[in-house]
Structures are given as structure tokens and as C-alpha cells.
Amino acid sequence: MESLKILGLIHTYGALLWITVIAIITLNLFRVLKKDEWGKHHTQWSVKLTLLALITSILMGSTGLVFLYEWEIWNSIKEGDLWWTHSMILSWILFSFVFFMLDPLLLRRLE
Image 1 (cartoon, rainbow, N blue to C red):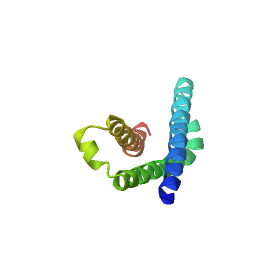
Image 2: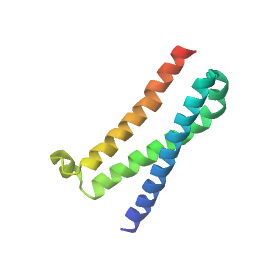
Image 3: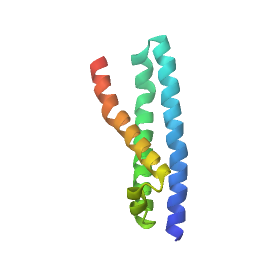
């Protein structure tokens, strides 16, 4: 039970860090796109934020899966009782897809 509390803390702080990374990326993207200096600013912070996003995405996904397994939530998800769980899983999949698959494809086309 103590390990689930620690996982809960990791999951909570990971969610806060994850939201912060999304906010930083979004705010910087809008600022940079207005100035039309994408290449200059992108290289300065993209490596750090990509690493941070990768770490938080892995933390959120792995701790979320442990919670689904330990609390035996799979049946409730199948029945649709826990609608908020569906939204969390969907947002994690969407963020991971956009950030790790769609973003590199778009960057190649911009270069």
C-alpha cells in the first residue's frame, strides 16, 4: 500500500510537470510563430523540453498503467463507468502522438 502512495505522488507531480511542459511549449510556439524566427528559438529550448516531455510522458503512462492494474479498473473502463479515466487516457495518447510522432514529421517538412 505504501508503494501505491509513492506512485500516486509520482503520478501527481508528473501530471503537474506534464501540464507545465505543454504550457511552455504552447506559449513559446505562439510567441515564436508571431516573430517568424522559428529556427533560431526552436533549437535553444527544444532539446530540453523534448527530454522533459519524454520523461513525464513515460512517468504518466507507466504509473497510470500500474494504477489500472492494481486497482483493477479495467472492467469499469470497459463498462464506461469511469468517464474521467477515458479522458485521461485519451489526452495522454493524443499528447504522446502529437509530440513524438507528428511533431518530428512536421519539423522535417519545415526544414
